Length: 222
Image (cartoon, rainbow, N blue to C red; front, top):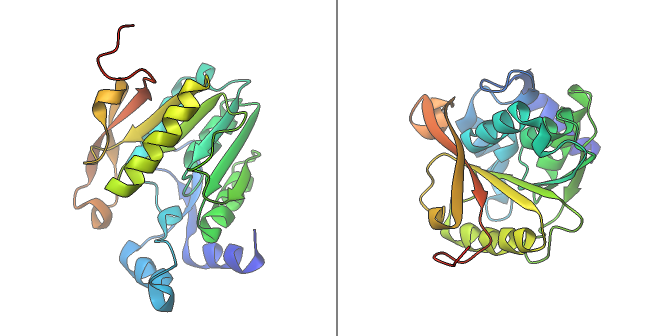
């Protein structure tokens, strides 16, 4: 975590409870549009949007599920993929995971994960990098919140998650009805009505589902 990135997070986001998972506090931006424009700025072609500054519906739903079902992660090695703020990773750590690795492609997100983990008194190993062409390593549980928001991302994400599941990991995703989620590959575990910033989603509540990936091809005998 660079000092500059950590300072940016502290300057532009304030520590507050998450609406649907108030057990967790995150550095969150009050006004999304201004921060979005600020982080793009002159780096528009390279700088990722500030996903780390908001508690997105998919992450909130998945973090709620992990919090309410700690046996899913307790004593297990967990990977939080495209971790954003680290909400899901923190929920897993609070639920007793043996270790939690949170991976992000944005240096400021990595800083936010580290700051948020410290604020919640848990250990999360925040890592900068794109691992989607690799594998989940030693992870026994792979968690991903709101990652099917574009066609290109969905293709890469599904391939990664299938490799993880076929290697024996349980794979859960939280999704608020994004268009590119391949629903035929998943089974539903839970559904929630999650409060969201209206400026981000054009609504105040998003119906959000927690899914578990089935590694078998659709229609395969079980």
